[in-house]
Image 1 (cartoon, rainbow, N blue to C red):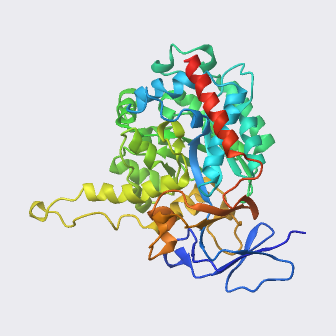
Image 2 (cartoon, rainbow, N blue to C red):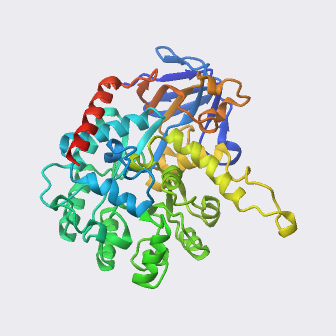
Image 3 (tube, rainbow, N blue to C red):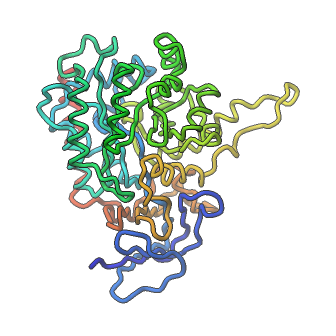
Length: 472
């Protein structure tokens, strides 16, 4: 029988819900049997564990809907730091991808997961594309093992490519494409072994070729979509990150990238795409009409110079919005606090950039009302849960899973806040994480993760980077 937990005296509670429900007065939250049992002014029950959170604000644990965990050992590569997407792909991830053995891959995954946990993230969807024929280690198994050790919810977006792009043509055999049959067989095996379709799942599997335009032939993509739906799996990929996608879709198929995805059965409520930065109005309408989701990755899009996704227009059209941090190789601080802070700022900047003076027909000065902190918390929590189909993570409220981050705003950057509730997103930085709960289990306590020695992890990371540099 589980012992209930009472979190008392919170300064503020953000729920991740829309409108007036975005905040709850609390000040207390009860957790029982892995779920939120009550919120309000609560008295301790006999035998209940009590956490005094008088110096804390509570958020729903973040749901990260797009990552590349293996890139945690590829931060700040000098050859890629000032490159745009296509040259960056060649300079960094493709250059190093074949150099990962099981030990390096496991270390990179652990670093990425720990970094995310310390930002208050409880669910990670990793778009892993390290697979090739005859591979001597199983990256899927490693990812699930590491997530289970840390107590995280983990969604494997199993990537693949059945054909190569020109920039990959001269790469070693470890990066050669898979066959469609081999990929589909592995997807069926992964679904049987790891996929839990329940709304409170700790493990999920998603079919996720790297990008529809380049990774497979149209008829293969149709077959993948059909196979995924027969297995009860969702679909995920990259799309429209740069103008290169628009040029390629026009040259190859005579249409826009989103129209191409519609033709091959890759739109719908069971599909979400990372990025969606470069879109026209008809594409936005089509994504909204089909309920296709987005993993918005503002920092990577900014770092690579790709642009800022039109999140408000997408959401107004009916697109489910979530937030992902993308890979650390194009985002040198791959955590959800940095990402949500950037999302808050960049949507405002995007609208402000479009302002024109009144004498030229303009009607507003800036874009400070384009995204609120409450919007960003919703996108990064319940929005992510919707995109992933995790219906039991629909905000910090009674009956939902107790995935909760308690932030202690004890750094000077938070001193003087008139509204402590907005601190983690608006002030940026990394607040002290008093506790992180996933399914009611405390996986971080007083900023520490059980059985994780950060100093040793840092030493291992430095050794790994030296090994990678020596082999390049």
